Amino acid sequence: MQKQVVGRKTIGLALGSGAFRGFAHIGVIKSLVKHGIPIDYLSGASIGAWIAAYYAAHADVKKMQAELAERPLENLPMFLDFSLTGGFIGGSKVNAVLKKSLNHYTFASLKIPLRIVATDLISGLPYIFETGDVARAVQASVAVPLVFKPVSHAGKLCVDGGLSNPVPCNLVKNMGADIVIGVNLYHQNEFVNRKFTMPKVILRSTRIVLHNLAKADIRGADIIIEPDTSMLVKDQGLQSYFSKAVTDELIRIGEKATDKAIPKIKKLLASYIQ
Image (cartoon, rainbow, N blue to C red; front, side):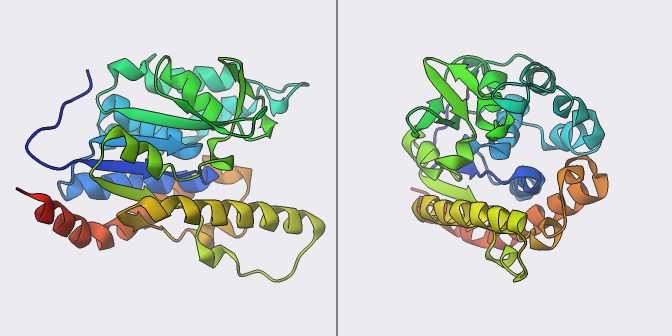
């Protein structure tokens, strides 16, 4: 059952896209829990959708870190589901991994209200999941084009939510959050390398688009948290999803960045007390 909040103003946490950088979101939530900051509403795009969904379902950051980050190699099977149509990786094993971590939750059965954004490949517009199977919604939101097969849903062809709303602050605001915390994983410090091969031009171009989209999204946030994972992004590839050393460092970076924002968050909460 989703909880009802009374007696204080509410906080919405929007977790952004960012591929393997997303483990930093676990650190963000760790810091908020450590400092007694409530999380009343959650939204997520791409990897942020998975982290947001897991916390909305279990409301247990220790369990989340243990299951999603302590044994990252357990997520490897989702990348071993090769497809000849729509993307290099099909959907059955991705869905199996997500269902295992989300225990067949529906949006109605979550502990914390949640919205997940994907992008409709047909119209190019965001598509918001707020009912039905949570694992299916996360699968749609993490479906990076060409990598993962798009997810068909309600007449839409859903792909990565980061393409249309990489830090969905508007979703928690629309859900009723009085204070919106946006977590942007696309840090300016990633733009350091000035030597470009053709693949690096393509990669940099994609990051520039996502960086600017995310900047637009977080304008609606009261608190902006931007973990600087640039040193880990520089030379990391697919293997980063399966390295515990990398995930541990990402969590630490996210926690440290959020620790710095805690005084401002507490000040906002205090200013709202009637």
